[in-house]
Image (cartoon, rainbow, N blue to C red; front, side, top):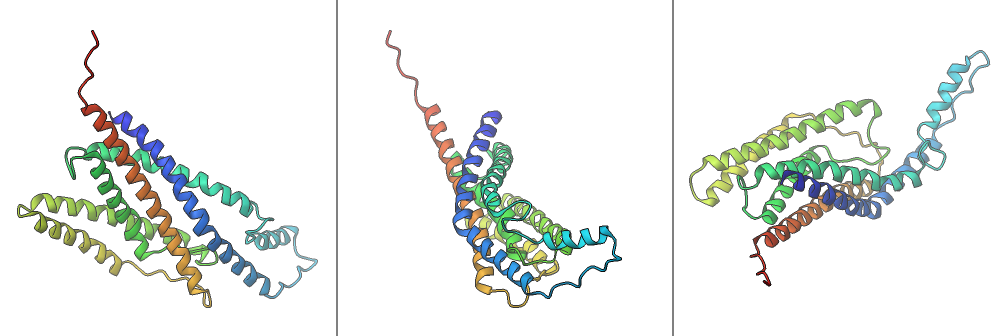
Length: 266
């Protein structure tokens, strides 16, 4: 059964990844192009560097040239924009495969123990919970930024902070589930208690973790906002498609297995 669920998760994750990739291509890539155009325009407006003295070593001259070329996102970049756009579907497909496999294993552990009894409802509830914990909670503290936003020297610290928020989101879900199981009152009381138990560590992390604001002065607010909406929308499309498809297939399989066997003709 677990093997069947994992295969189902991989296939549906791959399909949902392509659906999300299509959304990102239509709504996200134009914002990336606009941000790259701003970055390249700003780089072109900078004064030309002083010529390299004749006494400078060849290694220093090569380093200067490589540094100038390292910011090129266009056709002359190491990986041009057409290739990057095509690679978007590969990235979202691989993301879907990884998420689908992990989701199927978690789903197998939850089945019959937590949440709704039906596979369809459990899949939707699990996908919605994963979206909130892994995507929405970190995003609200550290939203995605387009090219030309962010200091390359702080990428490690920013990545670490984002991972911490992911861990906080998952831990908050675990605390909320444990709280709901301990409350013996009615369903509304359990839901309120679980919601409070979820929000307490999340809000505490939002308040205590450092804020990262590296948006350069003069960067268009509309472009930044639209890029972040497209980024969050891509994840919402992925998790919605994945949850709906995984639940629909699960209900179909459960419905077929519940049918009485056909009478024999003999």
